[in-house]
Length: 92
Length: 380
Image (cartoon, rainbow over all chains, first blue to last red; front, side, top):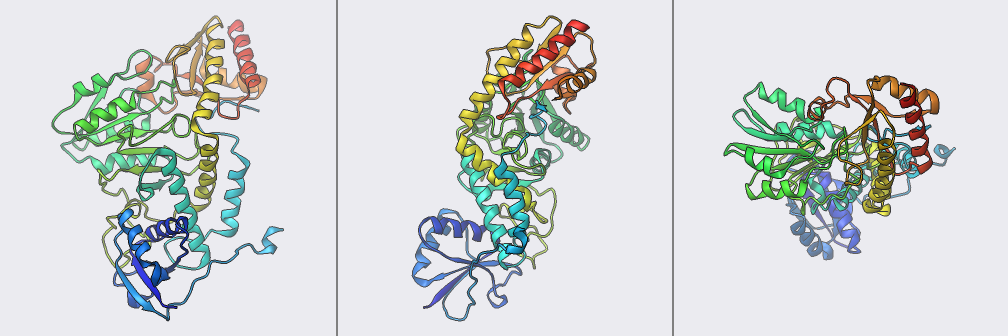
């Protein structure tokens, strides 16, 4: 399935968008922008299915967040999965 | 212990707050904005959740306008020094804490003019007095919401409307009101709201924040690493990055997030009601003890849960010491970092003893404190 990558200046912006879209029932990934998509040094991105791009654009407008760029139909961006974090040893 | 020092910092904290601090250190203590491993991303999500909860609590439309600071003092300094430049004029009240009075005094030495709106005998500032001090070069109005010395509540909404009518940014020091009294930045026309995390919001020490409305842009007090636009030598122009250089206090913010969730669940209205009942009981009891002088608004009037008193000429430090020795009562004597406010209410020579109940204070604890004060008053 083709994915899109929306690049933003700040992780704060990405975190807001992720939570806002989640409330709409859309799951997107937050990731560090691969260097070739980032013209401004450190930045973060939202990775989503291309079909979800209109919702992402809508959220950007609502929250007045301007993407640094949107790259469509990417196959090779590695997925960053959220996963459980608790290490049982630390629970002792 | 009978803890009546909630105006300094609230105690105890809800157990969920303690767990959240621990959980953050265990499971989410990456450095948000620096990388994308899961600890860092979880940290970013947690911080964003806290911004959203604070935004909900204060009626803030855009959570990205909530910037974290170490405390209210830092937030106030960021706001005051971020707005004012030499040649500007600023208005504050005569009840301000040193966290406003001192930065303003420092700025006076750099060409900023400061006008002080005098409070009445109860510690309340009339909005009309603020209006009379307005000038064409007034660039900021800064007023504390509730006095940390005597609990007096300022007419924030009225002063806010006045500020908005004149297009002047309005800064509110919510050190004693956040989580204690209802605050709605839109309804109250607040442009800058400085608040602590560790007092009425029941979070850990080392947390606080500043809301910056879209009508105001601040010069950052500090520049540095934000994890954004790293190749640029300039500080980001967007919020909260503009004001959040350096690693944030993630364990503290995790605790604050849980604390704000607790306050939202209980509701500020319920907390205010409970603390109001305790405060009025305290005021009524102190009012009946011969030799005790109580400061601030009289019993029956709305006030923050802060009560200041003296017993004759007895040193407030000795009163506090006796309260602790006889009944393990924790309170605060002295000037409460608010020399200007003490000058206003006429206690600049002696200071006062301050009792400040919190949401977990019991009626029996108020009665116990009143009993010890009554004994002390009889003995003097």
